Length: 286
Image (tube, rainbow, N blue to C red; front, top):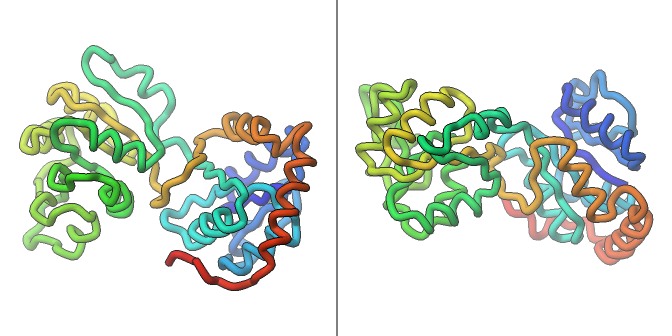
């Protein structure tokens, strides 16, 4: 049995259709009835999600893997899923919306700018650690902070913020980089503004989690000789993360979670889960 954590909407129906075509057994979890409204096929559980509640769902339904498609960054349900999956030793797969259209990186002229997609925060941090030069983030504070925690030299990390009459110290501290490296700029919306940031910081990497102003980011990075990395927005790092249902299905088949190997995988997981019968919230990382 697969358990899908969902925020509802069209995405829930797409996942349901995908799993149904693969003849998978699955149940969905929604935090409220509004999210569950209009859902397609499949059994549904509705209610606020805690570590204890999720662990109980996994045990009672002999869940062999959790698919987290919750779109809210830093969601409590996603945190619970990370901990339950780790403690009960079952795979956790994160399904996200693509950060950028797939044709963007293909269309970018490699002679002018190098760019790519890396949804692993650890992978982005490793890229920073192995690059001589600064890294500029055009990204939400939570994503910068998680990546920054994995970087050896945070003095090479820079975050531009919109200029204001007074410097927003509380906002600056949320990024997890040295306070002096959070710099105010009057223009961050166009190529010229981004180019100035990259030039001022002598950056070799531009890291962003947004599809806004893609052409300006690529153009500015090309002029500065910087590489652009598009990453994700969940606020958590994942071992298995995909941005399309085709890749998700391929992974599930490869791991024997659907298809011919599904029954054995479910039985093996159920045996493991029987050893984890405690309803305790101990070990939850808040």
